Image: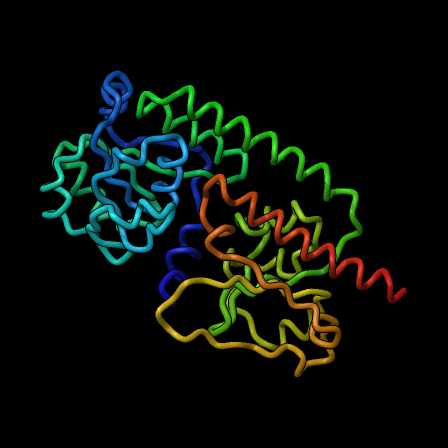
Length: 291
């Protein structure tokens, strides 16, 4: 269950693409950061993609992409940051995940006079905005702008490609036990919308509702989307074919997707979206052939 809480809490972001809670931002922009502690896997990825990976001197558990990230010293994870280790690394910038790191830890880091910036995107468009922001902080604006432009172009292409497709009713099985899904206010819902599928739990009152089997039986999704994560714990497998009352179970329309691609706020998310949309298109074609 290692990423369940990290992912589900992390999917809830603030409105601005990148904010700061201290007065050091201008100083950091004028003198590009050279020793960065990145407190989330997606921050590490986004720094590497603009060419700033060699400036990361410390990071957290599960920062495993690209492969070079595996060699970066670990100073903690979702359950807390080891401040002594962080201080020993002498960072000139900490980039934190405001909803994925402990507030107390972040407050202590700021109190020590270390510049802290926050990763807080809420939409696909905000990913490229954050990439550009990282470029400003590291003095790699040209690299960042090129990456952001490629991302924006692919996003535009994907939106145009899938929106003419007929809709499908889909259940995103965020976690099997307890069973959880997503509502319309979430990042995952936006990804589903990009594939032109209807989220059957879009109107749930909670962003990440805990649901029952009866809820799924009542919703009758055409397709069930199951993200697969790297985890040290055994994840329950649900054999949906046991419930033929659900179209997805009756016709074996269960789509497996890569959680690391879809649940991380990086440029690779579009690779995950494209793969998911293609698989959903296969389900769409299956139902069309039955008509």
